[in-house]
Structure formats: C-alpha cells, structure tokens
Image (cartoon, rainbow, N blue to C red; front, side):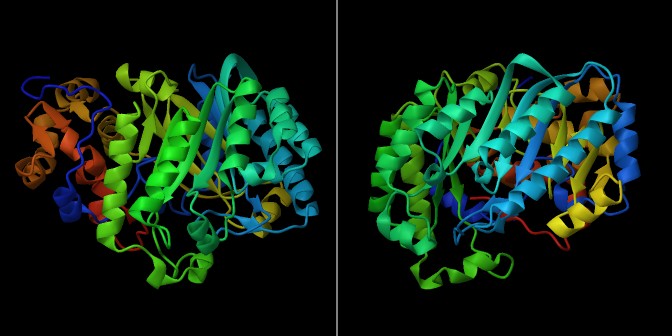
Length: 466
C-alpha cells in the first residue's frame, strides 16, 4: 500500500472534539448489506437453495443458537427476548430448535467441520441442564466439530454458580461472555439489574478453574445515574478481575422502539459531555492496564485470540461481533437468528408464534433475507477490511474482482475528503487507512462505502456511532 503507512494494531486515539463532530447514527456492520436491508422477497426456498449450493464447499461452519428467555427484565435491554419465570416455555422452544437443526443439517451434506459455536440471547442458561444437554447433543450429532472449536456462551452471572460453570464445561463450552454493565449500586437499581462484584468475580474464577480459555465482560456507558467517578470504580474492579476481553457499549435510549426502556427516568441519564468523559476514561484506563483496542467498543489483552487475529490480519466480523474464525458459513438457529450462507443472509421469524407455526408446517422458519449482487460482494469485502484492519488495499480488491478500484470507488474516495481533512483517514487511489484518531469513528468510514444506505435510508434504526 503506497503512501498510506500502517499504524500499529490496537492503537486508538481519543479526540473528543472529533467524536462530538461525527457522532451520529449508523450500522455496526456485522453484515453487509445490513439486516435492515433484508426483505421478505427472500424466502425459505432461497435459503434452502443457498444451503444446497454450498453443500460441498470447503468452507468451514460456524453455528449460532438464539435462546430468547430471561427471568427478569433489564430496563436498558434492546434484545429480542421473552421475559418469563415459566420454565416450561423453554422445553417447548428447545423441541422446535431441534426440529430446525435437523431440517438444516439435512441440507448440508458432506463433512464440513464446525469451527465455532455460540449460544446467545436472552439468557441461554435459562435452559435446564437436560435442555442444554439435548441441544448440544443434537448439534454434535448433526455436525462434525473440530477438536479445537470455539464453543462460547453468554451468561448472566446472577443465574449460574460454580457447579453450573462446571456443567457448561462438561458440555464442551470453553469461552464465556458475561454481562456486568456497571457495579455502581445506584446504576444497577435504576436499570433493574442487581449484581455485586463478589458474585461476578466468583463466576469468572470458577470459569478459569474449569478450563475456559477466554472470558469476555460487557460494560455499558450512558446508563442512568452513571458518573465519571462511579464508572472509574467499576473499571478498576473489572480490570482487577482480569477478563481477557472487555466490550464497552454505548447505551442507546430509544424508548419508542424498546418498551423496557420506558421504565428508565430520562432525567437520570448522564449529560452528553459526561457520557463522553466516561468513554475517554474507559479508553485511557484500559490502555494503561495493557488492553489493546480491537475495534469500535472492543478491547482485549495482547495474548487473547482476538488481539492475535488482529495482528495477523485475520480478524472478521459476523453477527456475534468480532471473530477470530474468518471465511465460514454461519448457520443460525432459533427465533430471530440471522445466518450467512455464501452470498446469502437469512433471518428467522421474530416471534415465537411465527417461528413455531413455520416449523409446524414443515418449513424452514426463514422470514426474510437477501442475496448479494456482485456490487454487494465487493463492498462487503471493503467494509470488512475497514472494520477489522482499519485499512484497505484497494489495488488488491481491484485485482481480485477485475475492476478499476480507483474509478469504481471514486465517489466514495472523494466523499472521504472531510474526514481526511480532520485526520480520521488517509487515502490514495490504491489504498485507504483509518488513523488512530479515526478508529473510534470507523463506522463513519465504512458508511461511506455503503451503497444501500445511501439509496434507502427510510426505516433505518441504528445505534449511535459513539
């Protein structure tokens, strides 16, 4: 790459004035095209055809299972969930997911190995042990897992003790993601999530004793009653616990879209200046503690697989965020789950009633999706590299897809001029680099190459960039 010299991976510079200037709403680019561009013109037959077309592909498989149930409601939550204390709901749900697994597996012939499995939600540990065993058993029977497959699960520390962690390990889980959000008792009360430090530390320590090789902790800034001082205390406690990865998400207050957020007192939300100060504090604190910036709101210890993948330019993004296993087809199971097969994306029905009805009819429960055209494929690669590597060798993209990249992306390169003037990017006709000052705003750079976003902004529901 000519004049666009690369910066060391993991380096990010916090420029509050630039953040204020460019902060807005935009996609997180866990896919391109983004999920809001999926349509119901893509049907279950299109998904079945995509599965059959990839039956003999050498590409490895990633699997995702969505478990929507929670027994309590966190007021900040914007996930697709079902809040209930009735455990019989999960038994029925697992039965239907097993049906879906069998239907999809019958379409995926050959010996394609599974390199990655993730259970998300909701709260996957809402399931009983028998239900978790049945689900994991069905997946292992239907698919061939690599010996070193990443098998991860999202856990609410309030729902699992050390014995439960041991049971997860016995099922093969080796990576853990847990929600913390904030240890400040006033904040926890304001969002209806009471979870003390001792409880969380005990779970993390148990995971290490049982051989989990990577632990991720999620935090949220911008919650009601948060202060710089209070969040500094939370950061100190989290850093002392030593998770391998830390994600610090920006709270998006959208009560008109997410009913639980209507219980949050808006006057208790931190002012924008305070929220920005909290972000700056987090970046400085994590950097001082030795964590490297992976991208957007994700940080990791230098020896963690994410940081290693970033250094080796093998980082990838999918619907679970940053991933160390690129170039896989993602088969997704459960209500609202989104998968990727070749150049097609498919999303399942969003409600339990619709999900069950489609499976009762003997159909794959796909409600919408999209098949990428040639332009989408090119832009997906460019956006992936921007989001993961913070640079793109446009000349190499041109050679791969037999295009004149400088001419093909001339409008996009021209539209980056204001960002370049502010020091967020460096561009030439054959390369693009996001600078350390631009890395927090990498979504703004990626949006420049999003043709579908430019063409149809109506109906978009995005989180803030920062």
